[in-house]
Length: 262
Ligand SMILES: NC(=O)c1ccc[n+]([C@@H]2O[C@H](COP(=O)([O-])OP(=O)(O)OC[C@H]3O[C@@H](n4cnc5c(N)ncnc54)[C@H](OP(=O)(O)O)[C@@H]3O)[C@@H](O)[C@H]2O)c1
Image 1: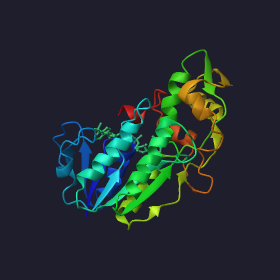
Image 2: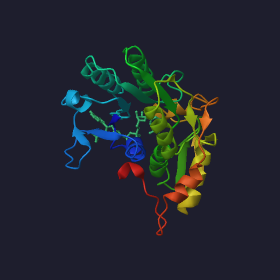
Image 3: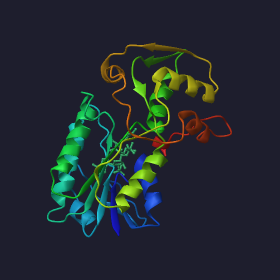
Image 4: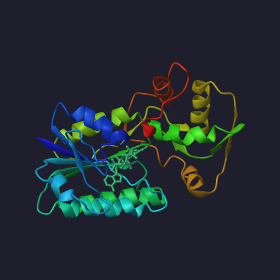
């Protein structure tokens, strides 16, 4: 079995590739020049080399994202470009979306929903998994918020961070299995407000700060206003808590290593 992973150099994609390499021939799409075997250069934004990257694959795990919160529709355009490049080929498409995509009227979540819909209407065999936010993303948000004398966080949203390795386990199983349509959502083991996540972060990082939860303007504020819409209420639950994740990423010098900067 041959599998193409778009976004295979990203946080989820790297974990997924590790899990698939023993089970399939893995090809990773990237915009960068990588000399190692298994990487193919291509660009979902321009369409460059996509046809070559796709040739002969049985399944595609579509994990790439432009991560452009100002222009979230770029992800939809990239998904369309991937589908156009397929021509008559019909590999199994596995797409990783976000819990709340159908509920929260924020641009990047709307774009996830639209990408799902584009895939579902494509005529390809497909599987869509919605996951909650990865621990790594929460850490990325919290780190700058904890720099000042008071750690200010948006008030309101309930979050359910999940370990990306557990998401990768699930995606690997889906890629190796038959097309399954929308599968059960996957979230982390705990549903918690942002201020609790901040307190956990400060405790593990060994910093003393007052935590202030306030209504915030802008994108973060809009997300904070969603209540429990980002929670996988009826979904499956992973096992690793945010605190366990932070401790697993803490070095002997007390610093917490970010996967996004690897
Ligand atoms: N992060 C979360 O909390 C979370 C939660 C639920 C679902 N998801 C979804 O899971 C997926 C993976 O998220 P992630 O956080 O692991 O992503 P990430 O680490 O930000 O990685 C983004 C990936 O997209 C690739 N990419 C970006 N633009 C590209 C282009 N024009 N052509 C080809 N590849 C391109 C990058 O590859 P190169 O730079 O090598 O080209 C990189 O591998 C996304 O669809 C995301 O929406 C994320």
